[in-house]
Amino acid sequence: SDTVTASAPSLVTAPSNELERVAGALAGGGSLEGLSRPLLEMLQTATGLDSTYLTAVDWAADTQRVLYAVNKAEMQIPEGLAVDWSDTLCRRSLDEGRACTTDVPSVWGDSNVAAALGIATYVSIPVLDPDSNVIGTLCGASSRPVDVDPLQLATMRMFAVLIGQQIAAQATATTQQQRAADLQSRLTEVDDLALQDPLTGLLNRRGIERWLATALANLRPGVEQVAIGFCDLDGFKHINDTLGHAVGDDALRSFAAAIRTIGRDGDLQGRLGGDEFVVAALLPSSAAALGVWKSRLRRAASTTVTLRSRPHDVRASVGVAAFTTSATPDESLSAADAAMYLDKASRRAAR
Image (cartoon, rainbow, N blue to C red; front, side, top):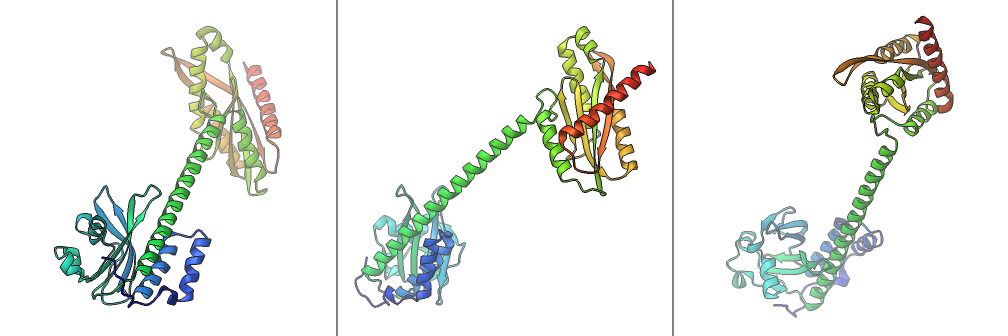
Protein backbone atom coordinates (compact mmCIF):
# COMPACT_ATOMS: atom_id res chain seq x y z
CA SER A 1 0.00 0.00 0.00
CA ASP A 2 1.02 3.67 -0.24
CA THR A 3 3.51 4.43 2.54
CA VAL A 4 3.96 7.59 4.59
CA THR A 5 7.53 7.21 5.83
CA ALA A 6 9.74 9.84 4.15
CA SER A 7 13.13 8.19 4.27
CA ALA A 8 14.01 8.94 0.63
CA PRO A 9 15.41 12.29 -0.58
CA SER A 10 12.92 15.02 -1.50
CA LEU A 11 12.30 15.98 -5.10
CA VAL A 12 13.52 19.49 -4.35
CA THR A 13 17.04 18.00 -4.24
CA ALA A 14 16.88 17.04 -7.92
CA PRO A 15 19.84 18.56 -9.78
CA SER A 16 19.01 21.82 -11.54
CA ASN A 17 20.28 20.54 -14.89
CA GLU A 18 17.64 17.80 -14.83
CA LEU A 19 14.95 20.39 -14.12
CA GLU A 20 16.26 22.49 -17.00
CA ARG A 21 16.14 19.48 -19.33
CA VAL A 22 12.51 18.82 -18.40
CA ALA A 23 11.61 22.47 -18.85
CA GLY A 24 13.35 22.51 -22.21
CA ALA A 25 11.53 19.40 -23.40
CA LEU A 26 8.18 20.85 -22.38
CA ALA A 27 8.83 24.31 -23.82
CA GLY A 28 10.28 23.02 -27.07
CA GLY A 29 7.71 20.32 -27.71
CA GLY A 30 10.49 17.73 -27.74
CA SER A 31 10.31 14.00 -28.15
CA LEU A 32 8.90 11.48 -25.69
CA GLU A 33 12.41 10.25 -24.95
CA GLY A 34 13.67 13.80 -24.46
CA LEU A 35 11.03 14.36 -21.80
CA SER A 36 11.02 10.93 -20.18
CA ARG A 37 14.73 10.43 -19.48
CA PRO A 38 15.23 13.51 -17.26
CA LEU A 39 11.98 12.73 -15.44
CA LEU A 40 13.18 9.19 -14.75
CA GLU A 41 16.52 10.51 -13.51
CA MET A 42 14.77 12.95 -11.19
CA LEU A 43 12.57 10.17 -9.81
CA GLN A 44 15.53 7.85 -9.30
CA THR A 45 17.48 10.57 -7.48
CA ALA A 46 14.52 11.65 -5.35
CA THR A 47 13.17 8.24 -4.37
CA GLY A 48 16.40 6.30 -4.01
CA LEU A 49 14.96 3.41 -6.01
CA ASP A 50 17.42 1.24 -7.93
CA SER A 51 15.58 1.66 -11.24
CA THR A 52 12.96 3.94 -12.69
CA TYR A 53 11.46 3.25 -16.09
CA LEU A 54 8.64 3.92 -18.53
CA THR A 55 6.72 1.12 -20.21
CA ALA A 56 4.20 0.76 -23.02
CA VAL A 57 1.28 -1.67 -22.80
CA ASP A 58 0.17 -3.43 -25.97
CA TRP A 59 -3.29 -4.72 -25.16
CA ALA A 60 -3.71 -6.47 -28.50
CA ALA A 61 -0.52 -8.50 -28.02
CA ASP A 62 -1.00 -8.73 -24.23
CA THR A 63 2.57 -7.56 -23.65
CA GLN A 64 4.37 -4.82 -21.77
CA ARG A 65 7.64 -3.35 -23.05
CA VAL A 66 10.21 -1.16 -21.32
CA LEU A 67 10.75 2.01 -23.36
CA TYR A 68 13.28 3.96 -21.28
CA ALA A 69 15.04 3.08 -18.04
CA VAL A 70 17.46 4.63 -15.56
CA ASN A 71 19.48 2.05 -13.59
CA LYS A 72 21.97 3.17 -10.97
CA ALA A 73 22.40 0.10 -8.80
CA GLU A 74 22.82 -3.63 -9.13
CA MET A 75 19.27 -4.04 -10.40
CA GLN A 76 19.10 -3.56 -14.16
CA ILE A 77 15.81 -3.15 -16.01
CA PRO A 78 16.82 -3.42 -19.68
CA GLU A 79 15.26 -1.15 -22.26
CA GLY A 80 13.33 -3.10 -24.86
CA LEU A 81 12.42 -5.87 -22.38
CA ALA A 82 9.02 -7.30 -23.31
CA VAL A 83 7.04 -9.50 -20.91
CA ASP A 84 3.67 -11.17 -20.79
CA TRP A 85 1.25 -8.58 -19.38
CA SER A 86 -0.55 -11.19 -17.29
CA ASP A 87 2.62 -11.78 -15.22
CA THR A 88 3.63 -8.15 -14.71
CA LEU A 89 3.69 -6.35 -11.39
CA CYS A 90 2.06 -3.37 -13.12
CA ARG A 91 -1.03 -5.40 -13.92
CA ARG A 92 -1.25 -6.58 -10.31
CA SER A 93 -0.73 -3.02 -9.11
CA LEU A 94 -3.52 -1.72 -11.31
CA ASP A 95 -5.90 -4.55 -10.49
CA GLU A 96 -5.40 -4.13 -6.74
CA GLY A 97 -5.09 -0.33 -6.66
CA ARG A 98 -1.71 -0.74 -4.95
CA ALA A 99 0.63 2.02 -6.18
CA CYS A 100 3.56 1.07 -3.97
CA THR A 101 4.66 -2.22 -2.40
CA THR A 102 7.75 -2.54 -0.23
CA ASP A 103 7.66 -6.34 0.25
CA VAL A 104 7.00 -7.80 -3.16
CA PRO A 105 8.05 -11.39 -2.26
CA SER A 106 5.34 -11.54 0.43
CA VAL A 107 2.62 -9.73 -1.55
CA TRP A 108 3.27 -11.12 -5.03
CA GLY A 109 5.43 -14.16 -4.40
CA ASP A 110 4.05 -15.98 -7.44
CA SER A 111 5.44 -13.40 -9.88
CA ASN A 112 8.13 -14.98 -12.04
CA VAL A 113 9.30 -11.58 -13.30
CA ALA A 114 9.71 -10.17 -9.77
CA ALA A 115 11.60 -13.26 -8.63
CA ALA A 116 13.89 -13.21 -11.66
CA LEU A 117 14.79 -9.53 -11.16
CA GLY A 118 14.94 -9.74 -7.37
CA ILE A 119 12.41 -6.96 -6.81
CA ALA A 120 11.56 -6.05 -3.20
CA THR A 121 10.02 -2.59 -3.67
CA TYR A 122 7.80 -1.74 -6.60
CA VAL A 123 5.98 1.44 -7.60
CA SER A 124 3.65 1.68 -10.61
CA ILE A 125 1.63 4.66 -11.85
CA PRO A 126 -0.54 4.26 -14.97
CA VAL A 127 0.03 6.49 -18.02
CA LEU A 128 -3.30 7.32 -19.65
CA ASP A 129 -4.40 8.53 -23.06
CA PRO A 130 -6.94 11.39 -23.45
CA ASP A 131 -9.77 8.85 -23.11
CA SER A 132 -8.33 7.57 -19.79
CA ASN A 133 -7.20 4.27 -21.30
CA VAL A 134 -4.00 2.77 -19.88
CA ILE A 135 -1.28 2.95 -22.52
CA GLY A 136 1.74 2.49 -20.29
CA THR A 137 3.16 2.78 -16.79
CA LEU A 138 5.71 4.89 -14.94
CA CYS A 139 7.55 2.52 -12.62
CA GLY A 140 10.21 2.26 -9.97
CA ALA A 141 11.84 -0.84 -8.50
CA SER A 142 14.46 -1.75 -5.94
CA SER A 143 16.05 -4.92 -4.61
CA ARG A 144 15.61 -3.62 -1.05
CA PRO A 145 12.74 -2.07 0.90
CA VAL A 146 12.44 1.64 0.06
CA ASP A 147 9.76 3.84 1.57
CA VAL A 148 8.19 6.16 -1.00
CA ASP A 149 6.19 8.97 0.62
CA PRO A 150 2.85 10.38 -0.59
CA LEU A 151 4.49 13.51 -2.01
CA GLN A 152 6.79 11.42 -4.19
CA LEU A 153 3.85 9.29 -5.34
CA ALA A 154 1.91 12.47 -6.18
CA THR A 155 4.90 13.71 -8.15
CA MET A 156 5.08 10.43 -10.07
CA ARG A 157 1.41 10.80 -10.93
CA MET A 158 2.07 14.32 -12.18
CA PHE A 159 4.99 13.03 -14.27
CA ALA A 160 2.75 10.28 -15.67
CA VAL A 161 0.25 12.95 -16.72
CA LEU A 162 3.00 14.96 -18.45
CA ILE A 163 4.19 11.85 -20.29
CA GLY A 164 0.63 10.96 -21.33
CA GLN A 165 0.14 14.47 -22.68
CA GLN A 166 3.42 14.25 -24.58
CA ILE A 167 2.38 10.93 -26.15
CA ALA A 168 -0.99 12.40 -27.14
CA ALA A 169 0.66 15.50 -28.61
CA GLN A 170 3.07 13.40 -30.65
CA ALA A 171 0.22 11.16 -31.83
CA THR A 172 -1.73 14.24 -32.92
CA ALA A 173 1.31 15.68 -34.69
CA THR A 174 1.93 12.36 -36.44
CA THR A 175 -1.70 12.18 -37.54
CA GLN A 176 -1.57 15.74 -38.85
CA GLN A 177 1.67 15.03 -40.71
CA GLN A 178 0.16 11.90 -42.22
CA ARG A 179 -2.96 13.79 -43.25
CA ALA A 180 -0.81 16.51 -44.79
CA ALA A 181 1.23 13.89 -46.64
CA ASP A 182 -1.94 12.17 -47.86
CA LEU A 183 -3.34 15.50 -49.02
CA GLN A 184 -0.12 16.34 -50.86
CA SER A 185 -0.18 12.92 -52.49
CA ARG A 186 -3.74 13.46 -53.66
CA LEU A 187 -2.86 16.94 -54.93
CA THR A 188 0.10 15.47 -56.81
CA GLU A 189 -2.16 12.85 -58.36
CA VAL A 190 -4.64 15.56 -59.37
CA ASP A 191 -1.80 17.66 -60.78
CA ASP A 192 -0.48 14.67 -62.71
CA LEU A 193 -3.92 14.05 -64.17
CA ALA A 194 -4.21 17.73 -65.07
CA LEU A 195 -1.01 17.39 -67.12
CA GLN A 196 -2.01 14.14 -68.84
CA ASP A 197 -3.79 13.59 -72.13
CA PRO A 198 -6.64 11.21 -71.25
CA LEU A 199 -6.68 9.47 -74.64
CA THR A 200 -3.00 8.56 -75.02
CA GLY A 201 -1.63 8.91 -71.50
CA LEU A 202 1.05 11.30 -72.79
CA LEU A 203 1.51 14.81 -71.46
CA ASN A 204 -1.08 17.32 -72.65
CA ARG A 205 -0.36 20.87 -73.84
CA ARG A 206 0.02 22.16 -70.30
CA GLY A 207 2.39 19.33 -69.42
CA ILE A 208 4.41 19.89 -72.59
CA GLU A 209 4.81 23.57 -71.86
CA ARG A 210 5.84 22.90 -68.27
CA TRP A 211 8.47 20.33 -69.32
CA LEU A 212 9.90 22.66 -71.97
CA ALA A 213 9.95 25.66 -69.63
CA THR A 214 11.94 23.69 -67.04
CA ALA A 215 14.38 22.15 -69.52
CA LEU A 216 15.05 25.36 -71.45
CA ALA A 217 15.44 27.51 -68.34
CA ASN A 218 18.05 25.13 -66.87
CA LEU A 219 19.96 24.46 -70.08
CA ARG A 220 23.78 24.51 -69.81
CA PRO A 221 25.06 26.24 -72.96
CA GLY A 222 27.92 24.47 -74.66
CA VAL A 223 27.27 21.28 -72.70
CA GLU A 224 23.78 20.18 -73.70
CA GLN A 225 20.92 20.95 -76.05
CA VAL A 226 17.17 20.52 -75.98
CA ALA A 227 15.96 18.64 -79.07
CA ILE A 228 12.27 19.14 -79.90
CA GLY A 229 10.35 17.08 -82.43
CA PHE A 230 6.95 18.17 -83.76
CA CYS A 231 4.89 15.36 -85.37
CA ASP A 232 1.73 15.76 -87.43
CA LEU A 233 0.00 12.60 -88.69
CA ASP A 234 -0.45 12.40 -92.46
CA GLY A 235 -3.88 11.29 -93.70
CA PHE A 236 -5.43 11.16 -90.22
CA LYS A 237 -8.60 12.87 -91.45
CA HIS A 238 -9.07 10.06 -93.98
CA ILE A 239 -8.91 7.44 -91.17
CA ASN A 240 -11.53 9.33 -89.18
CA ASP A 241 -13.80 9.87 -92.17
CA THR A 242 -13.66 6.32 -93.51
CA LEU A 243 -13.24 4.17 -90.40
CA GLY A 244 -14.82 6.34 -87.72
CA HIS A 245 -13.57 8.32 -84.75
CA ALA A 246 -13.20 5.26 -82.51
CA VAL A 247 -10.72 3.78 -84.97
CA GLY A 248 -9.07 7.19 -85.24
CA ASP A 249 -8.59 7.15 -81.48
CA ASP A 250 -6.97 3.72 -81.79
CA ALA A 251 -4.58 5.15 -84.38
CA LEU A 252 -3.64 8.02 -82.05
CA ARG A 253 -3.00 5.61 -79.18
CA SER A 254 -0.88 3.38 -81.42
CA PHE A 255 1.20 6.34 -82.60
CA ALA A 256 1.66 7.46 -78.98
CA ALA A 257 2.98 4.00 -78.14
CA ALA A 258 5.41 4.19 -81.06
CA ILE A 259 6.98 7.52 -80.03
CA ARG A 260 7.24 6.32 -76.45
CA THR A 261 9.85 3.80 -77.62
CA ILE A 262 12.45 6.48 -78.32
CA GLY A 263 12.19 8.10 -74.92
CA ARG A 264 14.31 7.69 -71.84
CA ASP A 265 13.19 8.35 -68.28
CA GLY A 266 12.57 12.06 -68.02
CA ASP A 267 12.15 12.68 -71.76
CA LEU A 268 9.06 14.36 -73.10
CA GLN A 269 6.32 12.65 -75.06
CA GLY A 270 3.15 14.67 -75.42
CA ARG A 271 0.05 15.31 -77.47
CA LEU A 272 -0.71 18.95 -78.21
CA GLY A 273 -4.17 18.05 -79.47
CA GLY A 274 -5.82 16.47 -82.49
CA ASP A 275 -3.13 14.59 -84.42
CA GLU A 276 -0.20 16.77 -83.29
CA PHE A 277 2.45 15.27 -81.04
CA VAL A 278 5.61 16.66 -79.44
CA VAL A 279 8.67 14.79 -78.22
CA ALA A 280 11.76 16.31 -76.65
CA ALA A 281 14.97 15.26 -74.95
CA LEU A 282 17.99 16.78 -73.27
CA LEU A 283 21.02 15.71 -75.34
CA PRO A 284 24.76 16.31 -75.36
CA SER A 285 25.61 19.44 -77.33
CA SER A 286 26.80 17.76 -80.52
CA ALA A 287 25.51 17.34 -84.05
CA ALA A 288 26.07 13.59 -83.83
CA ALA A 289 23.84 13.20 -80.76
CA LEU A 290 21.11 15.25 -82.42
CA GLY A 291 21.40 13.22 -85.64
CA VAL A 292 20.98 9.88 -83.85
CA TRP A 293 17.98 11.15 -81.92
CA LYS A 294 16.37 12.58 -85.06
CA SER A 295 16.78 9.27 -86.92
CA ARG A 296 15.14 7.35 -84.07
CA LEU A 297 12.24 9.78 -84.06
CA ARG A 298 11.68 9.51 -87.80
CA ARG A 299 11.67 5.70 -87.61
CA ALA A 300 9.14 5.76 -84.79
CA ALA A 301 6.98 8.27 -86.70
CA SER A 302 6.58 5.79 -89.56
CA THR A 303 4.81 2.76 -88.18
CA THR A 304 2.26 0.12 -89.10
CA VAL A 305 -0.70 -0.41 -86.80
CA THR A 306 -3.65 -2.80 -86.80
CA LEU A 307 -7.01 -1.10 -87.16
CA ARG A 308 -10.15 -3.24 -87.45
CA SER A 309 -7.99 -6.33 -87.88
CA ARG A 310 -6.19 -4.83 -90.85
CA PRO A 311 -2.70 -3.31 -91.00
CA HIS A 312 -2.53 0.41 -91.71
CA ASP A 313 0.51 2.55 -92.26
CA VAL A 314 0.57 5.55 -89.98
CA ARG A 315 3.02 8.20 -91.05
CA ALA A 316 3.81 11.60 -89.61
CA SER A 317 5.57 14.67 -90.91
CA VAL A 318 8.36 15.50 -88.48
CA GLY A 319 10.10 18.75 -87.73
CA VAL A 320 13.04 19.01 -85.36
CA ALA A 321 14.51 22.08 -83.70
CA ALA A 322 17.43 22.16 -81.30
CA PHE A 323 18.18 24.83 -78.71
CA THR A 324 21.57 25.34 -77.10
CA THR A 325 20.58 28.52 -75.27
CA SER A 326 17.56 29.48 -73.23
CA ALA A 327 14.25 30.01 -75.01
CA THR A 328 10.55 30.03 -74.18
CA PRO A 329 8.25 27.04 -74.77
CA ASP A 330 6.36 29.02 -77.45
CA GLU A 331 9.58 29.82 -79.29
CA SER A 332 10.74 26.23 -79.24
CA LEU A 333 7.38 24.82 -80.35
CA SER A 334 7.07 27.40 -83.13
CA ALA A 335 10.52 26.50 -84.46
CA ALA A 336 9.75 22.76 -84.44
CA ASP A 337 6.31 23.40 -85.97
CA ALA A 338 7.88 25.41 -88.81
CA ALA A 339 10.35 22.60 -89.47
CA MET A 340 7.46 20.13 -89.55
CA TYR A 341 5.63 22.11 -92.23
CA LEU A 342 8.78 22.16 -94.35
CA ASP A 343 8.96 18.36 -94.01
CA LYS A 344 5.28 18.00 -94.90
CA ALA A 345 5.70 20.19 -97.99
CA SER A 346 8.76 18.20 -99.05
CA ARG A 347 6.88 14.90 -98.68
CA ARG A 348 3.96 16.19 -100.76
CA ALA A 349 6.29 17.43 -103.49
CA ALA A 350 7.95 14.02 -103.65
CA ARG A 351 4.68 12.19 -104.30
